[in-house]
Image (cartoon, rainbow, N blue to C red; front, side, top):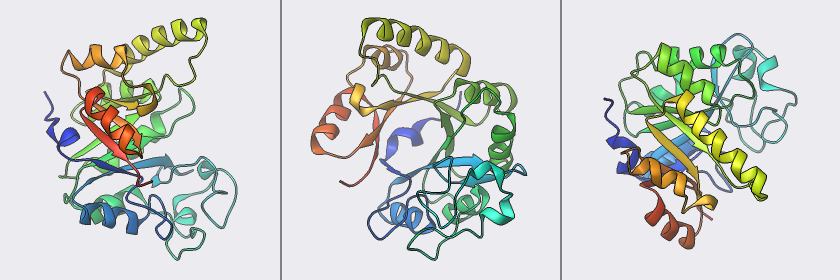
Length: 239
């Protein structure tokens, strides 16, 4: 059984400890989280040539001086693209792991729209192959967990869950079935749960079985209080 203690030992800064003068998922954001004594939550997408890149959006437009899908550019091109209002560029996952160098735990969310996750998952697994620090992967997409369970089972894996849009009865019933199926397929070591859904009977049922629950994205004191009752640790942003 994997050692899961690092998941709940300390809060995790959402996309690094960013703010008005620090870009999300940047080197500065990672260093700020480490300086605070916290873990780092980050996002990864795969480049056209199969390299894991640290970036949240599927499109470049919101955060950078370029536009278009991340996946349509090769890594060498992506790592030269600057963020808006910053001289920092999009980093490779291997670079960020070298920067952290075991000084803080890292939760890596894999951004995957479809069932075709092999290229993305392999890129992250390759980046983590020689990393000795505390790290975990997670995704909304259960196929990511399934891939890691079969191809890199020693890497801690999580399933990201939200119930927030399940308003109508039919949606709630369908959502409950989908969550159960996702857990079955992903075989997660932990859950990353939407703070807006806590308390959650589904999350509680997994916690009772020993599955840790971290919750995102916590911004207020009220949400911190809710997280203290319904989860084991938080992924947070400063309001």
